[in-house]
Image (cartoon, rainbow, N blue to C red; front, side, top):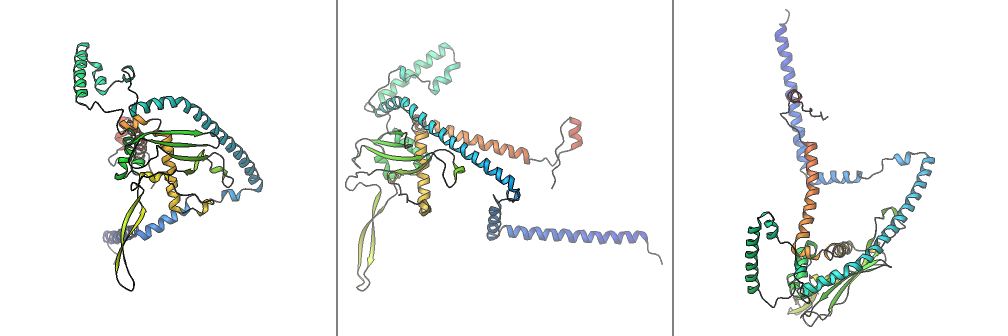
Length: 395
């Protein structure tokens, strides 16, 4: 008896449905297992390690090149080395130019110091600078401007009469700057602030040969130390390394030197005393011993760790401290000293934050444009409207 074709087809379809369901279950199980594995820290660490080892690994292409081509690459490297030497000379010239222009800046910095210390009172013309209120009044009529000016003058007189007439210069000018800059603020401990209130100026002096610069911190009389200046000297090099000449990227700080601080008795902020109990082994008696240990302080900046003759012997922790120290010294010289008033008011910090947000925003926007897909996108409707269809992305 012949089989019913319709029943046969239904049976065939049922078999396929069963297979599809089994495949779906297997796929779900595989995804579940994969998901569990990816949640395992050990597995993730192993995967990351494998990926890291693959980054930058040679593809074998250079090794596969004919000997005659490898010979030409050596010639190209010699050319590159000559270009690197010229680049080093370029940076040396830049440093000399920086030294030259620093002499032009110096009179302005000296005047800034005189104002902040209170030894010079700027004249009215020297103080002409639009305030926020005056900028907002630009669109007002002449009559309104006159009234606003009169009102502001009255407020100014009241404020001046209420203010302390003995106030000189700009109180805590440099302490405020240090506390406004993140990398400097992290160095300051609460017990440092009374001493830093006497900080009157930070200046920089450049040396041409050998290349380098010295930061000088000028202090007024205080109860902590007798020094009127504390210095931090940075030495720089501007030549390609013999071992790795192509790693050269311009002048770099390679060592720094602090200075001794003449602390007054009992006022050393870089050390602290701790009490520790000791028990006698045989007698069992207990005694209290007082020890002096190093203390966190901004003034440790003037006592950097020593650099060993062989950099290969340098402790990783010391290397990290020196790297941070070099960054701080460079930032003070390059940004803080030239733009001190803007760091005091916070405007320089706002500019830095804005630049970073701009860069991040551009990257995020680019990623969104690349990755964004509309699940409801209809190519036919888009074509009717004249829109370009989305590109098909291979899975």
